[in-house]
Amino acid sequence: MKGFIEQSWQKFNPLLLVLSPLWILYWLITAIRRMCYRIGIKDTVKVAVPVIIIGNLTVGGNGKTPVVVWLVKLMQRLGYNVGVISRGYGGTNQNTLIVGSATDSKECGDEPKLIVNQTGCLMAVGRDRVNAAQSLIEHAKSLGKPLDFIVSDDGLQHYRLHRDAEIIVIDGERRFGNGLLLPMGPNREGQWRMDNALLKICNGAQPHQGEALMTLAPEQWRSVKTNEIMTVDIAKQSSVAMAGIGYPQRFFDTLVTLGIKTENNVGFADHQHYEYEQLSMLISDSQWLLMTEKDAVKCREFSDDTWCYLPVAAVFDDNIEQKIKEHLEEIHHGV
Image (cartoon, rainbow, N blue to C red):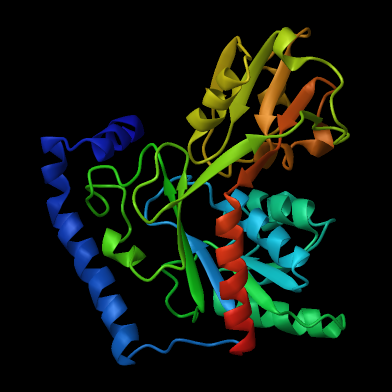
């Protein structure tokens, strides 16, 4: 059923008309909600630090996390102290949680753990993004390192949190599917929502006018168990690939471009947690298990020596970094 719906979202299927009452209800609820914030019936909260939202209009994996990592590292190079907030999807935590290097991914979620591992930034997760932002600000002050910016991983539709800028990530291959809102299509909001975005990023494929092209550059294979760079040629090994991300096929396609022929590709649900027995049965004793970095943060404690992951880094043209730098300066000076 899930596969049928996702295919129908890409190209309209008349059977989707059965969902039209739910589509109308979704449109009505989201429109009323936006209006309530616009006219002041619901309050928008502005925290003490500028907030930049990185989000998307569609459901499924669009590549937001590499953008978050790229932006945080750019801001750190520019001398800003930046913190990150996230919903913490897939984590068991029900309240606001400060995430550190020792935090279990089962508690905070896989993406927050990956972001902290790659950037070393201060991070908080929680369902209430306003509370998460305020808690992170206070935590940074207690450490004697006041924040200059907060980056929100997702939260484009979390209107309660005031934002100083929005960056919207678009899947270059799937884009906006059939153009319809949920549940008849993959869109949470219409494309008009991008009109005031600081930056529209196209992840792969050919960007449309006004969009910045992002490519995900594969780095060196690393051991899931030790995090050390692998010295073997993975392309010459018998291997099985797995991916528990929003769009697993993107990882499998990357392996093809790297000249890696796998014996099998196994997709899991996004944010899924794993057990050793579940993954070890995917391969024989002589095979290697290939995975994404997002999967690796959940497997390190029980990994075998032949499990490895492929880090990727977001790459943009230099003029995009310059544009972001200028806007960051404007926002920071305007505080």
